[in-house]
Image (cartoon, rainbow, N blue to C red; front, side):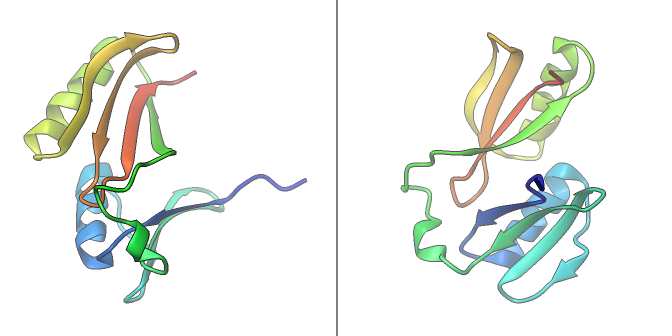
Length: 121
């Protein structure tokens, strides 16, 4: 069976979202179109932005999923990334705290999509 290899985030404005994610994750897209932008995140795996259903991509819409970023290192690494991201002006949803899987925090992109940072499992 194949494993998932495309993680798609619905956004209102691909240009603004591309800038946000490029700066946040310090990555560049490998494919850009007016309605779809793809970033390589691992061999054969893409993280993509899409405006195909952008009427749902508004901050007031409840989000039932999160983009996850697991960082190596101790809880200090999570806290340091939180400080770096807040310096970039991200919207903080949950500041760093300890959960069952370790230190974590949650921020939101301009469309309200959630991004959780945690330690590597």
